[in-house]
Length: 139
Image (cartoon, rainbow, N blue to C red; front, side, top):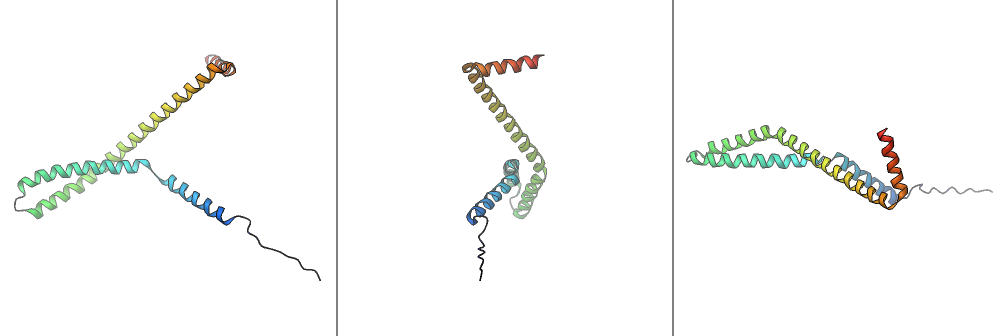
């Protein structure tokens, strides 16, 4: 009488599978994150709040007995400001984030060039490679 044992072990470690799925979830959330969205919301809130404060000061002078009318006018101004300033705030945020990204990229390139030049001063092989690349680009 022959008996064959066929154990069924999982081919992957369950803890590792959970960690990998958590990391994949964090990466998906990070890919969906837009840094300009938060900045544009903050800029929009600042613009609208400044306009509402000015409108409150103006409405307060003539709204002695008409509090409901003043309240409605203030809310109308607030919603109109949201409608008017949403596109410029988004555009300003995109421009600011793009400028900051370009600046940080230029700074990183300059630092990398400085490190390469310091290495080339210390190692004649690297200096020869740089001189060969420069002579190829000039011809």
